[in-house]
Image (cartoon, rainbow, N blue to C red; front, side, top):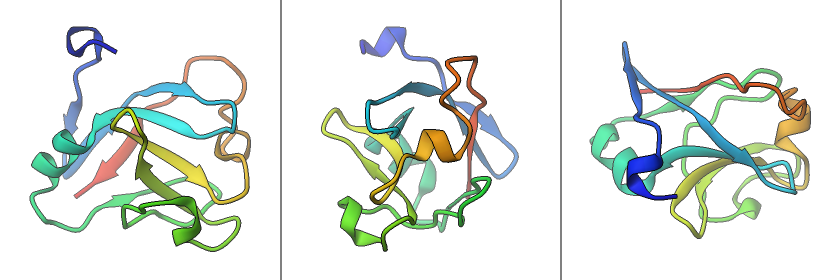
Length: 110
């Protein structure tokens, strides 16, 4: 995606709201925040991504096997965007995001 076509991040009290750019064929949820944007906003503070039906995500993983099978993680994909995934499972289906309807924003708290 070109930088001009990306939605602007929405700064909220104690964090940001990210939009879902797309859900890949494995059910990974790709957000509209890049690693440089995330690191600039994080400023070495702890963070928490609160997800329904799964444990909160509080670390950035390098790969899927950094967490146990079925656990949630966030990582930056090869295009540089944050993705939320489940190790050996489908995050979009578990979170009810496989409907193709308008997706809710994902909140990251600092």
